[in-house]
Structure formats: C-alpha cells, structure tokens
Amino acid sequence: TALQLGSINTARHYRLQRDGAIAPGRWANLILFDSLEDFRVRDVYYRGELVARDGDMLHRYEGEPDLSLMQNTMHVDEFEPAHLRIYD
Image (cartoon, rainbow, N blue to C red; front, top):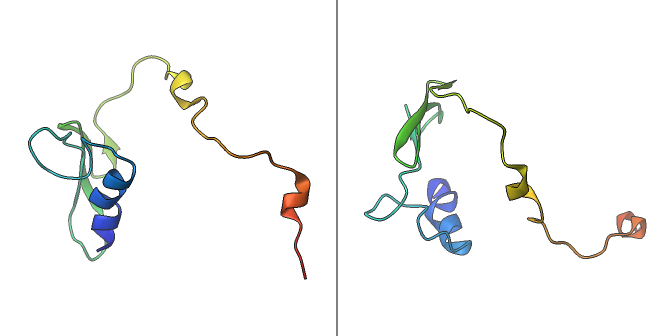
C-alpha cells in the first residue's frame, strides 16, 4: 500500500532500524489521520511526544538549528552544463 511504501519499506531500504513501524525498541514517530480517504493529519508524534495537533505546532523550537547536520549529506558525480542538453 502507499502507506507501507512511505513507512516501513522506506525505513528498511535506508536501514533506519528504529523507524517505520510501531513496535518495542522503535521510535514512536507517528502521523494520525482523521480519515484514510482525505489524509487530513490530526496528530503528529515525534519520538513518542505529541508535537502537532490539527495543523498547529504544540512546542516552539528554542535556539538555532544545527546546520552542520545538513552539510555533506548529498553526494553526486561531477556536473557539467552539457548534462542538461536535450537530444532530438
């Protein structure tokens, strides 16, 4: 199913051992929907803590984000403008 593709299958593919399922030893990162027909998010849990309800964040982040966590996370081969060429 689409939900499985976006949860446990993805976690397994990227070897995220604590994500993707509800089970002992896993992080409780959950999104609860009012209905599976329109996918309107009701609650969001991060590591077991309710962090958002009905589109509103319940906690404000204090301090500056650690941007170093985002550095060197994407590794691609050399890129040249010729790679954008469209062939007929």
